[in-house]
Length: 198
Image 1 (spheres, helix red, strand yellow):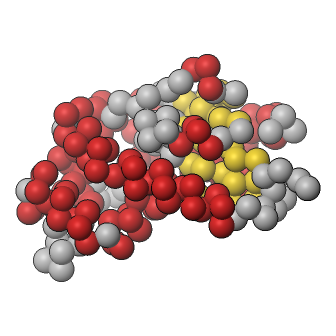
Image 2 (tube, helix red, strand yellow; image 1 turned 120 degrees about the horizontal axis):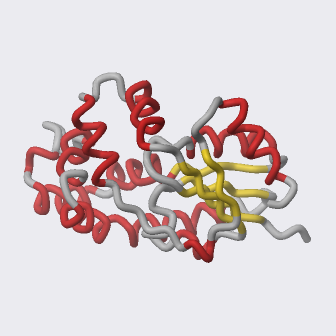
């Protein structure tokens, strides 16, 4: 029986993780991808007690009038410093770890699962991975990408997010490093080089 392979894609915000994950999902047969940012938002929506705990930590202004999380407001708070980010991580990481575990079990008939997560190492999701790809890009490239992705976000907020995002990287667990400072075509060619090694 073919053993499922779990591919982790790590890297800071705006480095191109989503492009890499989508490209791999299109290239690898019988594959499915998991965006951990979207998974976290699902957890917020489904877990009323979590929204309450987040409000207790960061203030009621992080909630919309219907009690849901205001991600823009929460993002400004948690990206303002490492202490604030740690508070949120302590609340969410155990829930994320459990949901990723369930997702892998539910999709065990696939040949490949691609996990896209800036917090891959911080949340312990590297535990599930057979291979890990680290995407890197210069701060200016990341800033340009985030400007295009978040048209309503002020440039000052984008720069603060880039400056204050600290992610753990376990270098001994990284199998491949891809630099994303050129064209998209070049980026995809670099991914093609490693596909046969996954």
